[in-house]
Length: 509
Image 1: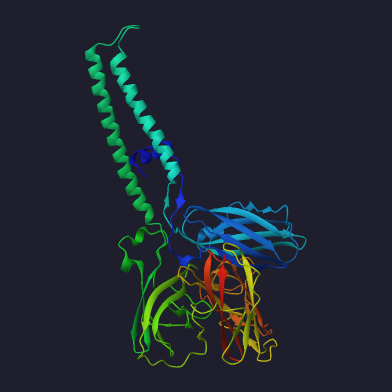
Image 2 (image 1 turned 180 degrees about the horizontal axis):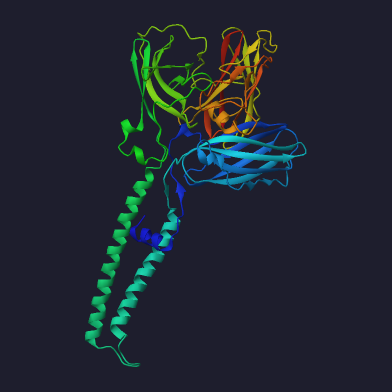
């Protein structure tokens, strides 16, 4: 942007913007969640803003008992402010579909937030919340056309101001009808040059001020914690560095996080996906333990090669983030056995023919994907997967895997998107419990029960227990692909103490 455009921007107090890409949460910023509130059930999509403060676009589809209306409210997830909600806003019902509602909310600062849904209907009133992580993902730049227009208007203002100065020096003291003398014309010319020089200095000073402000605002852009892997034999150590160790301006960051405030989610402090790159023909879902301020794990037998690491952690305030790193497994590494709660898959490489709707598992079981006829980007879906026994019948003796009916990871083949999701959606269980601990509608997955009166401040997992109700062989994951391209999906389900990992490919339009 030209300095003149910047100056005019300050004069007119106008900001017109276009997003610049940035990586945070590995490219999947929107929230997809299925929540229950008494007899009501909502499929919620929250499209998070790219900058904070910003507006979140919210969609809700009623898939339970009929409802009459929905009010939405933004609230911090924790702290005193979470106890004092602002005035709620009504969602607008679709004229074409009475079960579909839309709305929007301002999120004014970065951090852990929740969107509270107040539902009214024939069955009474209910309240349920969906947690969201609000972070700035990019700085924003002025659109080229807008900048050009403002620059031309600014040039007009500067030349007009110079013309006013010239006229005042040349003609202000003349009687009506008198002509200015050559001396007055010279003084007017000097005054015009001086005024242009003065205004040029102002423009340059304003441009410098603008650059300083822009640099300061860039600190708002979310930067995940750094994870450094160290491999010794088959012993993997993951050093998570706090912002104090990586940034001098940590105290200025709008979402300061520590490397020592993690809480368990699904029974583990870290969920680590290791995927061999670029063929994605080996994938492991592992769970390092925190020992002496470092995450450590004895790796199982893994094919040698370069791996992309994606580590999901949750902070004590409910803020989730995914840490990323690279790791090379040498051919000389001798791995140990796979832990009972870990999972692995060795699918064909992505360069081979795209995997179809049915994936054959090593023990004769198969996993089937009820694939939609077409899949488009930025569209919310509920993807359904079924586990079948060697005879093709529904698998029996199903068990919760890490407290859930299943886990899934959606990974784009170019590495720009990674999303670890659950049957309820993309939110972690800790944040869901924090958001709903005082709504009376604690969210839980099939196979898991929770006490709605739990005290999350003492132990995030203290009231999570396995339900005795039998699990289905069918699991669904709410998700929407953020961009077009090819993706590989890893789905884990458990039966008879065996964790199965199905693998599927899809091309998103």
